[in-house]
Every structure is written in C-alpha cells, then in structure tokens.
Length: 94
Image 1: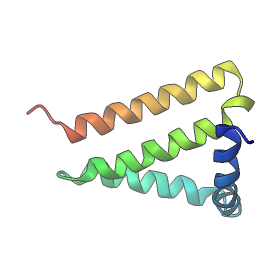
Image 2 (image 1 turned 180 degrees about the horizontal axis):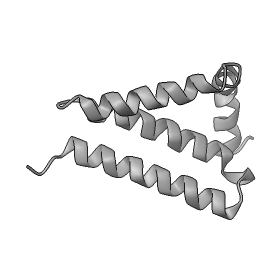
Image 3 (image 1 turned 90 degrees about the vertical axis):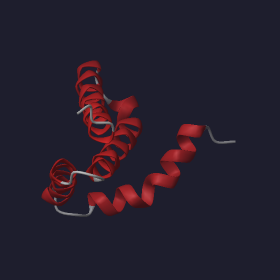
C-alpha cells in the first residue's frame, strides 16, 4: 500500500511533466502575472495570490525530500511571505 507522499507524487506526475515541458520562463511569467493581478485587483485579487500560494506549497511539498536545509528555509520563507500577502489582501485593516 503506497504512502500518502507516494500517492500525491503519483497523482502529481502528469501535471509536473506538463509544467516541465514548457519553456522555463512560462511558469515564472504565469506566477508573476497572478501576483501582479492579485496586487492590482482590489476586491478579489487575494484569490489570485492564494492560487500562487497553493502552487508554491505544492511544489515545496513535492521537492521537500530532495532539498538542502537552506533551500527548505528559503522556500518556506517565500511561502510564508505569500501567505502573509494573501491574508493582508483578504482582510484589509483600513
């Protein structure tokens, strides 16, 4: 019986292969466009940033066993920063 990680990796394989088949700049530009759109759109732009956050969390989860401790720290910091931006856009204070 496969573990949860193996099941997620197996289910993710077709999508990861499709993403890796794209030119390197395409995923970057998609993430950049979603982040910029999320910042510029006032009411529901936080949803776009949330999509980026989920994507980054998924990539971090898949790559976690193969990352060094400094890479884990840097990528976790980016994920936390994205979560912070999502929350501040979703629940503005003023």
